[in-house]
Length: 242
Image (cartoon, rainbow, N blue to C red):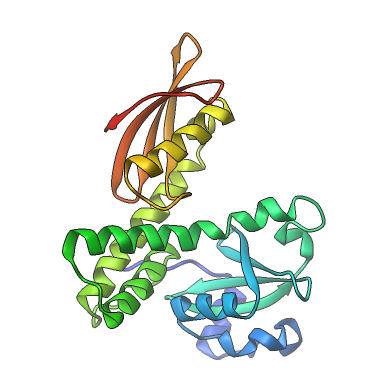
């Protein structure tokens, strides 16, 4: 069950200690996060004014509105292997920045939905459990190595994070992105309501043209699936369990 994001040879060498990262490339306000566990580091990034803009090529790109700074983060073995300053265009600035930053909210929303669903099903809700679950979720989502010595809460979170990562991969494939945007967006909202999940939790993982101006989407909301039919105007006609 072990997985990790493959880094560049330079990053691998840095992790092995054979070379040191160039300090000038790491903004001072986040330099202490290099080597930190991804779950805690992500919370720290947010508390310092950064929002995740996108993930691309094995890197996360974070934007700080206050300082107009874009940084690239590489996660390996569940830890921040590098945090380097990047060109602002990688974070969607200038042009389309707000839309790009919205992508970062998906990670937080997915965690909220997964944890809420877990609590509803298992009745686990103490602070330590939630912390372990969140850490496991982020390790699973970002390809960190599974910590076999951790808790049941961590295990459940890791499994949920892996599922969310799978949902995102399927949602980005061409066959899932087809169909009218209005129909897909309407089904995403309706699936959130149907599964009683926070807004932005659901994604379309496949779609087909039913004919007559109607489109059928398979919706993923964490582990749950539903089938939603909507027309090109964005009117939902039906939603049911998959």
